[in-house]
Image 1 (spheres, rainbow, N blue to C red):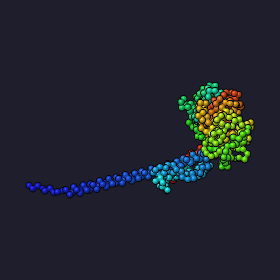
Image 2 (cartoon, one colour):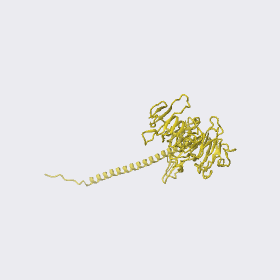
Image 3 (cartoon, rainbow, N blue to C red):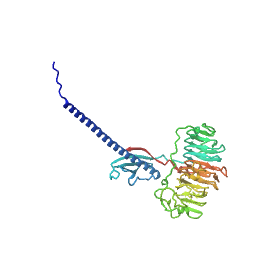
Image 4 (cartoon, one colour):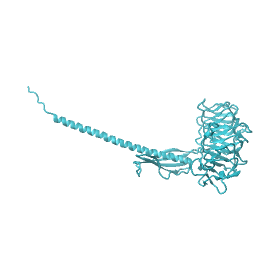
Length: 473
């Protein structure tokens, strides 16, 4: 039998290898092309995302600026956010009027330049943000955005309305808090869920501003741990404990531009405050509405007074108009000034904006003075830490007797009354701070009473601007 003859197939193997090589090369080339395209798209997405972040940064900046100046129109030129070796990111912002005075429309554009020295933006993203001013409410006579602490030496504190974001601590069983209403939105997390705690006493006043009210109203987000009344209604108290809908005070910041409109100008020096004489007019004759002393930079101005501290001594300061001061009042040594607002009619409250701290040994308002609100933007000084554990950017000491029913003390940081003596009832118009620490001397000759008739309805709170929505354009 003849066997089949085997043919030479070397050529077909070479063809097969060639085909496989071409296919593999095509596959590898495809992978490389896909990888390059993916890297390019990823790089593009990163830059687009960076442009988005830049636009959002511009909107955030605009909202911050609105909180300083509600008339802020936006930046006049592009603001550089990042300036690297490979690219540069900027934003520009326009702030437009909204449908009401408390609304603004912010148009923010983020730009990314690749390379960094490019003259035209390679990537841009534009967003529209609606900003709204918080619903404006007004202050309480005694307000703390965190803690109200009545130290053990305090005998009695009397206020019409008390509002506290954190909690109230009344340290000693002989200390009384007398109020027509007490509202507490938080608690001391280190205790038994207490909105109000300590060994002290809650007391209802002998009479109420509203003749129809007969009981002190207490509202707490958690437990009222002072008994009586505890969490239960009594003959003297209407108690609503463990409420879930008590709102926080978002901000007590009052920008001076809220009161000082564009008709006010910069005086250029602070001589009105530092002039000699037992009595000073603010502003002095010829300086009407020139109430910024000085207005050359943010923060305390070292050229004003003694290295940024103005010693008022025991002078009488007549506040004839709203004023804005970039200096500390009496930081070097406590003063015992008398203040007077000669305008006593309705809506004649004068605001004194202090971009620094206030350090009074005692405070007096002249008989018949109209209301004055002192607003301190200063930080809590380290020098007061031992006496004021919760901060003391506004400080009242213990020299002389404080008798200032026409004065309301408002601090963006802490308020501290340290062994303060009071010479009248009422002794102050009101108090508001991030923390309020009261360590006043009892009954020498009077305890601390806040004037229930002080026009707190002229002191706005919750003026902060916030974003309510945004969209990509």
